[in-house]
Image (cartoon, rainbow, N blue to C red; front, side, top):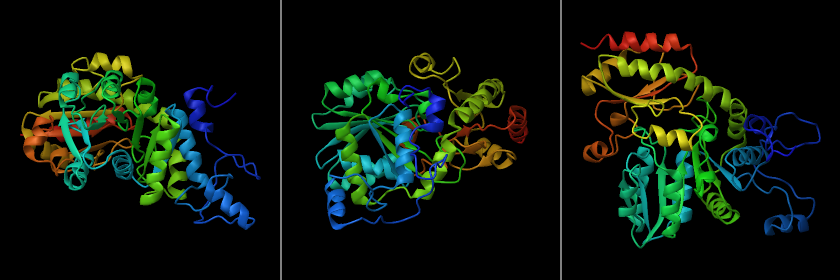
Length: 394
């Protein structure tokens, strides 16, 4: 059976693993910076692309390539390129696909540093951008300009939990001659496959669900076509944002249990979200698995599950949120997500602090919004921790 024909869990375990001379069951860590040639001609052929083989770890490494082939298989893409961080992936996409005079349309509640990089730095080189609520496709259409080359969406978005119709966004992008990029970090390839819905590129901060153990930082970009894959790879090689082999080995190890972790965390979240929604001190809850979420039906169509990310606001606003976060004991107060542990954070003062308040509010990121990444602990313990923390609010 080829990996392309195998089921998702089988691919998680087996896709991308090369067969070495020793019969290694898992890909070894090729902890080397450079690879020797048997003779000068072989070296020339490898540099020219006329012969297979490795040259230098910035250009490629067997451990990293094994991870890339695995993720590409999971996302049904032509190829993947692993990066040193999620922001390395975002930067590589911007630099590879946008030139001076080009315009990008993006989700208004996109990850703060992704927006900050564009507005504060790419703008210095003549790249323009517009941020709208892409869950409303009319906003997306209205934001297009003659020079729009890229539509960059996050779905579900961080941390507003808004959801964009990916297939419809792809149609809009392609009719305009633009590319569609989807940040699939919140969903993971287990719950959503944007390339199958028409997207051109998918990116992940593998720090989150793909690795799942809060012990590495990394990113990956999966391309739908060979041409895009070569474009992304060439830019990565030039800027040197490559993932190192030890990082790649850890991510590959974590990736094998992706489905198990995501399913267990979602099982917990399906109990935590309605509990929060019914709590007298909670003003509102945004979880895509709740019927109260405005894009709940869309999620049922384009995703295979609802994940484990919740945003909610307490009736006491920012001060109530601060009190609750200061009193959690089981949950960690930290900005990451998607690990085996439950984490809570305050986007307005943490991940999205670089955004102006007016822009934050327009994107649905209110001062009192709390983001909760539900882990795989016993759900009774998660709820008990939240209960005692909320009890501290006057």
